[in-house]
Length: 165
Image (cartoon, rainbow, N blue to C red):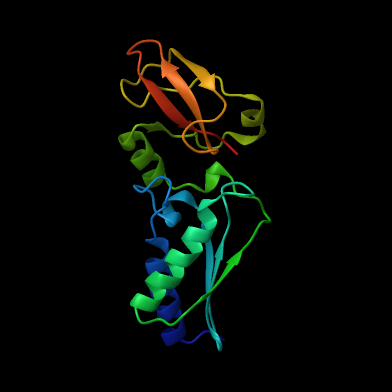
């Protein structure tokens, strides 16, 4: 049974862990990305589950360390951070606020509810700079492996597109 004190501790730990910034896209938190999966308060301490945006994501080690540091600084002890690979992360786990932050940062966010069609490419990607949909893919990988490089044919600006998974 979860006591009110334990539930309050869990919510505090979730808030603190969720505020950790993504090291590759610092305007996003791990809560915005949907990387933070669960927080549990156990008799042995706090346990945090995270799921990488893709297997082999180099940011996960830094994220785990930043979670540990944030929870320790908040006086919540040293947590156990567990990487959970199943179910696999999907861009559908991103928050609407996270999508808006991406766009404001100059990265085209993935469409919500893209589903399996996204595995075969995207119909259109709107330019995060001018909003035009006359855009073209330049490269399958952008500044990080979870992004592709695109160019807007209207404003001629290159931009990253956060790929659907």
